[in-house]
Length: 388
Image 1: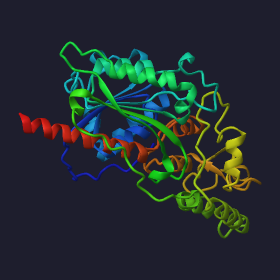
Image 2: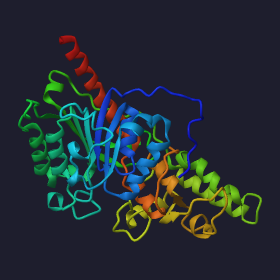
Image 3: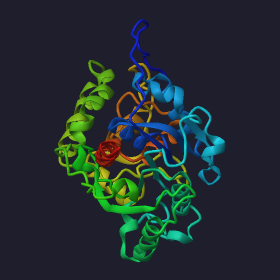
Image 4: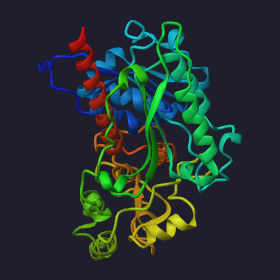
């Protein structure tokens, strides 16, 4: 991973964030980026995948805007079932205390509820709702945010959702008298309505500790951006990919690829990016239905393209760029479709990188929801300060 660090001599003041968070199942940072942009400083990011955890560490290390996390955030590569804040937090140990964390967030695994799987729900061993609820009881954050797929909202999971909500709302007070929670929203958000060039509907639960919420009202974020087509999102990177062939023997082929792709890709946003499961043998854009949707946008979903090296072809352009179904996406292009900043780099091989992207929560959606949570936290703080 290579990044340009902040020039020497440029000293920016490192300010402690007003609001803190702990995030589990953090992946490669999609939710963490959005919450950071919203105003949360991360005390801990917990992720079991070694490549994703390395991605988090290396990006935090080089991005100036993450300088507070560089000194105070524990990036833990471990099973969340084994995560114990009192024991495992090192950098942030002096900042952590039960009841003082502003937000506990997590995009718990989606296979138990995904339409692409068997939808075994709580019978799936990958269901981590019980764990994040247990952590909420242990940590007692001021707010809780849980992300999952839209399939969780299916009628077959009505009873399970009711029990999750009841567990939060009927939680016994802590030893110090901290109360349980009030679920203020459990809604489906479409990423395309927040400037992400992709459908990607996600269900989001938001809850506040009762002593924080009191008389305050939570306002869910409203759609905030115009639709961005696949062409608008990827046109610059696609131009970069055909540039090495300009003026050469394949110049006409390259221009034809771009023009054909532009015509199709300008029609719509992308389908939900899938293919991040480790059950897949390699990196591709998902099952037949997903590949068909990508083909309608001028993109081949049969694999993921090798990225140009120093602007030069990799020798796999017949497969990656000039295929009959159109160009394949590079990992970087998939990350743009997912809403990642262009300077966020991924570690590991191509398949490992694509899985990190495919499993992510779009940062712009996380930011919008994070900002809506902070509005309540700010109002609660101002209310309580006025009374003291």
